[in-house]
Image 1 (cartoon, rainbow, N blue to C red):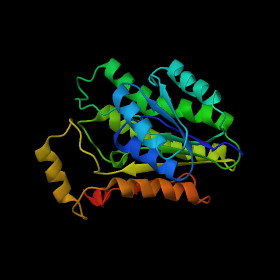
Image 2: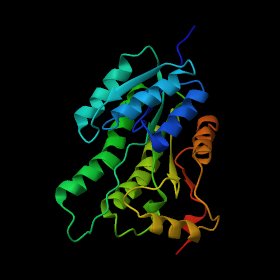
Image 3: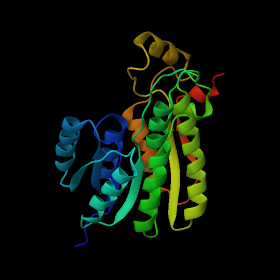
Length: 241
């Protein structure tokens, strides 16, 4: 009996990355669960996913470094599964002022949010056969002027451009798409008061559920005629001025 196809999810220990890993498990994929700092959460997530009977492999790697990308795919090569899906979810969001943002902070964000997905996609493409899928997790902020998050916004806009370039370059063998969440999970960079104010402005008046995020990935898994697209799951946030 053939081994399950393999899906790599970066930044999969918690939050949205965990949701995407759960979605892939439900669809019969073995998981290479990447993490960096969240070791205890990664172990807990792996235990939960293994309860479904699907193989789950853990890989700790610093994707801000090219060597970390190499470590991730070296581990993928050691599994008995063929790589079919890559979800580039790992990312860094830091508030800063463009006038005082240090070069180190700029590089750290761009290295993880944009360079790492490019390097991971290139490694994945070298291993994938016909029918492979790469999904980049961007952000509705890619099309917004978020002055508080200059490096983040630029990295996500670049990732959407990279998605289109890779889709054209890797077709017809591999499809490349993006998912751009809106307000789904709050973070420490935004106060509770600011978060609630943003939610009240949404045309649909609420945050996204993880099931709604999962359904975007499900769609991309099963519709083989979609490539080079960004699915915006934002409750209408992109309609606001």
